[in-house]
Length: 70
Image 1 (cartoon, helix red, strand yellow):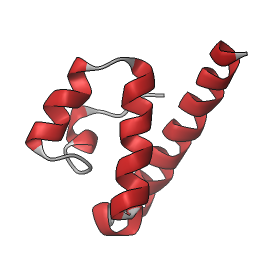
Image 2 (cartoon, helix red, strand yellow; image 1 turned 90 degrees about the horizontal axis):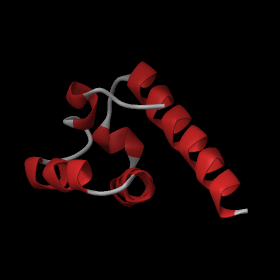
Image 3 (cartoon, helix red, strand yellow; image 1 turned 45 degrees about the vertical axis):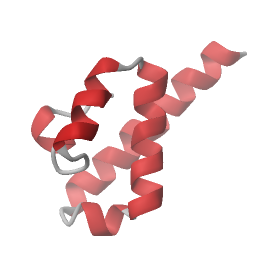
Image 4 (cartoon, rainbow, N blue to C red; image 1 turned 90 degrees about the vertical axis):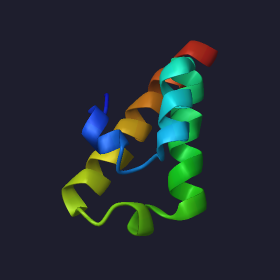
């Protein structure tokens, strides 16, 4: 359910990545979702396997958060 640092560097710039490490699990999830929907995952990540992993991670995080919010 987690992305490795080298994978995160393909999504976030240095400043965004620094913030990503400072915030909670919930905020990290929203940052990921916002980044791929705003910038477009196809533009951010050219590697098909990594795209699938990012989407899978976001789906799993959202399911986990949904359980917590019940």
